[in-house]
Length: 419
Image (tube, rainbow, N blue to C red; front, side, top):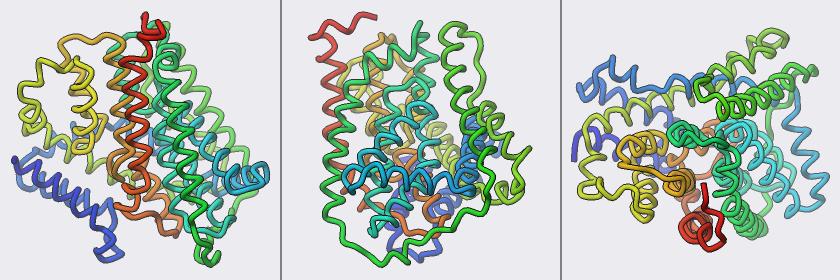
């Protein structure tokens, strides 16, 4: 085992036992300490560390965090959660509407955006129902992960696959191959979390109180949200017709947040309230991943499988388990570079399985970490590491089986696998 892989394993272990560590120890602190150890030990040079960071992702998250906090600050999150509860009229229907909304936002604006926007909504729903936030928050994590699977802009790894695949119609391709397993997985997830919700005991509501909105001018936040939606969809449409046009999502996100910083009266407060700790977590995560990848640990672990990377079972096995160690975005990037050849089915299986890999551990998907960090920032207590794994395991198993079965067998049997 290389030193980089040992540090990465130690980070995973510390995060998994965080509930037994002092309450002041946060996920971002563990990851940042690991990154500093790797830089100071010489495992990765400072210049290489800077290059390892995907600053496009960091810029995208900055814009999304700005928008999500502005939505919360002007009461939009409270209104949405109240609307969902009023329309739902019961805990079951409230959960259904919430998961459907989270999945839709994820498909349109990416899973990280849906996680940031949905966290305060999940908390206010929990407050309204008088229960712990754990089940609504975990349902949010699962919904945004599954919902992002069917969209070419649903998550960063799908964007990488779109670029590599050069599809004529990325939206149509993803929907044809992954809409069915996405819908079926979401339905199963809803049934499972409805059962989990029914078993939740009532708690004192004052333990779930959240900061109240402080602004009565919602239009800058709503304008930024609408602008982000339009720009993301427009970028996807233009790229399908003009592949040479590649506007970074980070630039799109920052541009979309401009109405907030230009017209909001609380622009400086919003800037201060951006979740800088989560941004630090991702910077550190990229550095840790860069050091592990530089060590060649993933390539060594592949061994003789390197010549079989386009076989369905190998695609599923490697992309799922490697994503637990190295995060799905860098794994997909390396996988695409190592593939000897790739047809549409292989790329769609890689997209589906690497995305669903996020539904296993907290650190398996960036959106999970965002939910935890945002929850703690809002003063609430999120779920624990093994609690999350226990609640998502049934959904993970079923959704993986649905995705693999549909892409490998279902499309062929129904005659829908023609490119």
